[in-house]
Length: 356
Image (cartoon, rainbow, N blue to C red; front, side, top):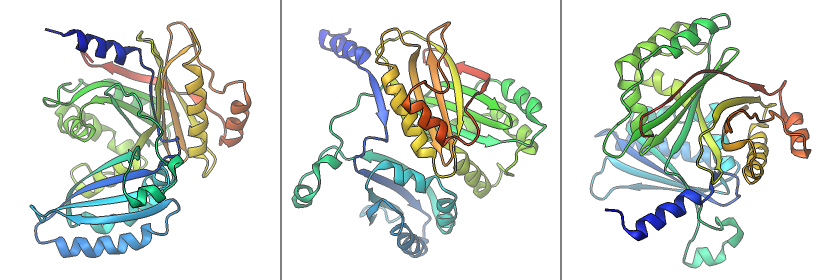
C-alpha cells in the first residue's frame, strides 16, 4: 500500500525538471575500481607508475591516489581529482588514452569507472579550497543512465548495414533484479552509425547482458565485414579497444517537467578539430533554455560527445520540429565551430521495453 509520504515524494519527482550536466565548472572526482589478476600486483603497480607520470602532465589533472584493499589484495582503487569534468572527458575519450592504458590490460581482470562532481567537503584542505569550485546544489535525476556508441562503416555498405541493424530480435529487457533495458534508438547518416541506449540500474551490466544475447551477437558478427575499424568480438583485447573508441558519452541531459511522450530524432554536429566539447556545451545551453519555454517543441534532450563527434538526441512534441541550428547568437557560434554542417540523422530503429 502506498503511503501519503510516498505519493508526495513521487509527485515531487514527477514535476521536478531533470538536468544532468558536465558543464557546471565544479571539481571532478574519478573513482576507478580495478580487479587485478592474482600474482600480477607488482606488474600492475609498475604499469600504474608509468601511467601516473603521463597523466600528471594532462591539462586539468590535479592529483590521484592508488589504494590496495586490506581485505583482498586483488582489489585496487584509483581516485583522481580534476579541475572540472570537460578536461577529464577530453583526455579519457582520446586516442592518447587508449594507447596509454594498453600496458594495464594484461594484468587487469576487470575495471569500473565512476565520475562524481564534488558537492561538499570538510577538513583543512576544504577550507583552503575555492568554494565556487564545488557543485552548488544537488541535481535531479530520473533514474535513467544514457549512453551511446558510434562507429563508421565502409562507404557503399550503408544500405546493407541499415537492413541488418533494423532486423534483429530485441534482447530480454530485464537484466537482473536491479537493472533493466529501457530503450534503444539507432540512427545513421552517411556511413556513421549512432546507437543510443537508456538503462535503469547498472550500465555495464546491461551492456554485457546485450552482448551475450545470441540474436544481438549474430547481428554484430554480420556487420563486422562492413566496419571501417576491424574488430574480433572473440578476442577480448580487440573488442575492448573497439568499444572504447566507439563510446559516445552523454555530457548533458535535460527534461521538462511535462511527462508526455514525444517523437525522437537525432541531429549530428561534426565539429572542427578540438571544438567538440565547446560545441556540445553550446547545445546544452540552447536546450536548457528550450525546455523552460511553455509549449516549446523540445521535451527532452541528451547531448553526446566524443572528440569532434557531437550528437543531439531530442524528443519533441508530436507534429513539431526542432531547429538544427537556432536563430540566435548561440546558433552563429555553433555554425562557426562546425566542420561542414549539422544534419538530421535517419532513424533506423527505436525500441522501447515494456514498462520502461
